[in-house]
Length: 130
Image (cartoon, rainbow, N blue to C red; front, side):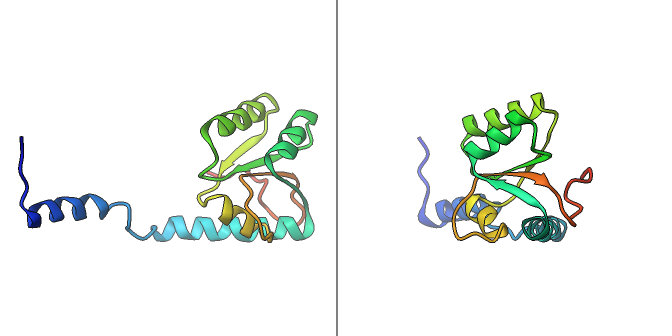
């Protein structure tokens, strides 16, 4: 059995928490901002479906061209969307933000874990991304 003194235990905890509280890298932040601006342009000039049920319907009917999944989407739901996208040969993008961020990026005042893009409009969101 190990016994930590207060200072050592506190140092242990702070060193493990340091990784999760680090600021996002510049490249990652720029990538998120470019995806947000592309998404905003799609909502303005193109056509998109927000929501899991409607998105799945869009995948089944073959209307969807790209699917965005929020980072905090439940694993079972995420795998269902990925599986249907694979069958429909549709590209899947795992959005870096959570469902609140994804809804806000679409210009809506509600959470959204799945966004299905039907028509890109003036945006270049449908071009192959690395």
